[in-house]
Length: 222
Image (cartoon, rainbow, N blue to C red; front, side, top):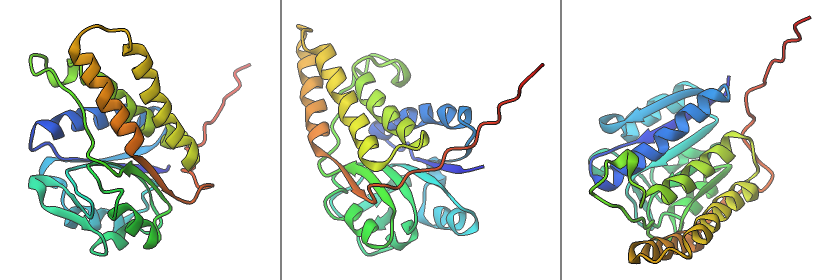
């Protein structure tokens, strides 16, 4: 079976939200027949990732972490990848990064090292929260999680790069339209953040590549 790896540190509030959103992708993967590797919290280091990726084939990788233009970090904000440092590990991979600004330098570097395709953000990833709600139930953060899950599902469904990107853009637009007439100031701020993220979403790599989803066996019962 094809394998998808989720990389989910949660050492601060922002990562706790992202961890929940990526976590929603796990049952989507298992329901489609993928084997799942779930790296969480302290396991989210380069050494652990390297050990896994050199011991077995990973068909798709879904990453969460803090970042800047050329650096992506994991547990306790320890560096996992820098442009031209460790990113050769991503050769031959399809990936999505939920992280700030790495589309500027790091993601192009990953593609130059042989990455198949990757989707992320060339701007700071912005989202809004309401701390009065549990992370899993926060309605203000829901649109941003929904966009993330939509991208994950598109990758798992075997969509090509441009189609995955279009799914993310369309989901942003869907929420913007849905919230357009809400009078509360918070929803105007949510719309602003969605537009910011939408305009900064970047897709790089092989336009024709895709993850080959697990084959479904259909049984005919007489």
